[in-house]
Image (cartoon, rainbow, N blue to C red; front, side):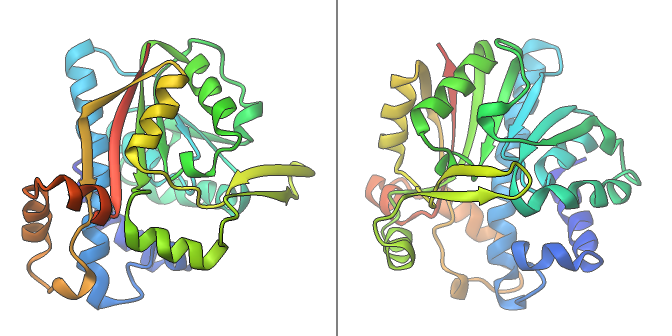
Length: 274
């Protein structure tokens, strides 16, 4: 199933699942639909392309951990393409995963995706057991980050891959917005009702690629600089009903390093276990 076909089915799912509508917001504003669709698909296509290349290169399906899988959207996409994955998540996301399963079973085997409610520090995965770990909008929530990266590294097989889908912490506008919201408080403690204990979390602790690169290298990962993709440059008012795909292509032709580092909203990249 292609990302575009999955997206159309996902929109139909949202129409009948109001619990997801405030989070994904595709149905809340027609004016921003193309803007949001582009971002969703650019991320999903990056993940899809990475898995396709892995299967072609290794001639096998990878063992996958979706760390911080949220509502399971990416994992359901993988399941629709015959890829099994294990997801871990916290908070309000977990209960909706099972509720979504019957919908996606109409189009593939949604049971290829299984998930647990767990903190990364209590995950049940064995050392050197996973080929690919996805961390989508997750790294900026993991604290202490050095310990989290150690767990990710330990869980991956030698040469294993970390797929990072993140907000670009170098984006000037987003940094100013977050500082207004949380000030300089980048790490918080919150009480988890299900775990019955405090959990330390990054408070939208986004970082620029150069900082992620240093942290990952310290943790014995090797970031692949050729894999870096910056996305979402054009603002919502630049979109109309027909130009979303055109704008997505146009922004990828922007080669100005200054614009990419400081004015693109999202970043995707890969790091390998050394």
